[in-house]
Image (cartoon, rainbow, N blue to C red; front, top):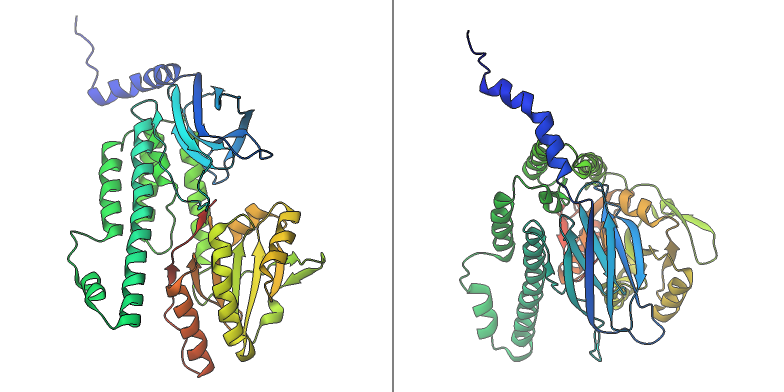
Length: 417
């Protein structure tokens, strides 16, 4: 009697459904999250922790919340169909991300005890699974990269100041001519690339794929879609991967509409009196649209510099409109009174829709619009480079010259959402 011969490919096909069922059966249906905080918030502020899940759409959903105990500890019990990316919002101060394929424990610093408080990234190590360590390493890389960029920016800024004030150019010459093993962005990218290769077959990889979709990097966009398809083949239950693919494609299509030379999206928001105002009335002038919020430190730090810019060019065909994404109208009104901005103030009536329409996830984000109502460039954060570019565009425009080079400028100082 002849034995049946089953080809390897057919065998794999026959086993796949059973293997996938077994794989999903082994996924944890419930995990425990334990956390502790070192420093408490001031009296009167919420001592609460919120837990949200990232479903791949770019809009994390709050799934639970707890009041902090007197001993500054908290815990959650997560019931789930499959693991995913979760984030802890600890008293509006610490923001901690983790992967939910095993119990996790995290100790965070809590509220800042310094006299002068600056909201800067702080790395919090989450004790959990080996997959969760992918997020730990990515978070550490991002945090250190940000802090290093601040340090480099300050070094360059003060070296130039020292040269201008004293005439001594030694510091500035060293800073401009020093040899580096690689630039900051390349260094960060190299670290991320290695991590992503190590975890290329793990579902937690979706954490690193969420920022793709930029129209400026077609190679990254195509690579991200391939990686998501690969994960979906390995983990058909990973609905976040399919949601993320759909979101990235949708966001890229919207970002293409925001490229230099494209007409600025038509928007209409209420002013401080509740009257709807649009941007069409500013045609014929250069317009800086500033997306901000009362709680955003970098936004408010930029306001005095924007005031100087406005004062210098307001009589030469330049205007500013601030659009707040505050959800607390009273906080918005108080911030307007405190800052006394001499230009039009509008309040978004749908923060998520506004951020999706103008494609930003951190503030301040600013768009410079030309006299025909078309986008000139976008600024992520506000700093000397952004200010210089705005001045150049206005000066060249007033002189009848072509617009400045079209590009997205990343400046120091931005609060992520």
